[in-house]
Image (cartoon, rainbow, N blue to C red; front, side, top):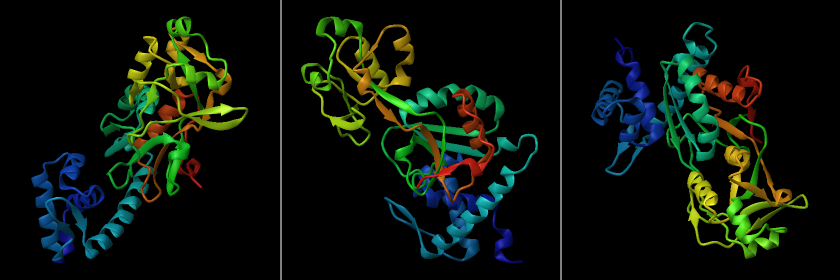
Length: 314
C-alpha cells in the first residue's frame, strides 16, 4: 500500500492551515484544536511522506521547498473541492465548514452585526469568526478567508464584491458645541475650532479628506483629543468636545434624533462602497456567498447570483 493511501485528509488541511498562518498556535485556533494536536498531525504527515515539510524555530514556522510545492498543489486541490461543493444544490450545502473574516470597525457595525441573526438562521452549522480591527493586513498571510474594506483599499490581486453603494464622510458637531462656538462657514474656519483627531490603524494621525469645489483636499485640523475608535469619537462629539470627521451612515441615528448636525455639507467627501474581498486563488465558500447576499439585501442591492459577478480590482 502506498504511503499516500494512509494519509489522513485532516492532516493535509492542518498542514495547509499552518503554512497560511505561519504559526502552530494560530493554526490550532483556526482549526479548533490544541497546538499539540496540530503538531502531532504534522509529525504524522511528515513521517508518512518521508519528507520534511516545515522549518520550525521558537519564533517562526515556514515551509521547506518540498512543503511549498505540496502546499501549492494542495491549495489547488482544495479549491477544486470547494468549487464542487459551491455548485452543489442540496439542502444544507451552504452550512459546510468555517469562515474567518477581518473587518474594520465601521463595516462591522453597519454591515456585519445587522447580518448576523439572519446568517445564523440560514447557516446554523458554519463556524464564523469575525475579527474587528482597522490596521491594514494581508488577509491571506494572516489566515483569513475574506476581509471588508473600502474599494480603493482592496489589493489589486484580490476578487472584490461591492456590499453597499457609495459612502460619504462628513463633519459633525453637537448643537451644544455649535451654540458655544458657532458654525464654520469655510474650510479655513476649522483652524479656529476644536476638532477630534482620528488615529489610524498604523498609529498615524489622519488628515481629513474633504471636497473643495470638486477636488480632494487633505487638511490637518487642530485639536488635542485623538481617538482611534468611532464609538468613542461619536460620544465625544455628542458631548460637545469638538467637531468630528465621521462616516455619514455611521451617525444616521444621531443625525435623525438631532444629537449631531452636519457642518460644511458642501465639503463632505465621497467614498468608495464597502467591498468584501478574498484571494482569487481561494474558492468562494457557499456560506460566504450567503453572508454577502444577506448584507446586499439589507443594503437594498440585488443578490449576487454567482462568482462571475464578483469584480476583480484593476
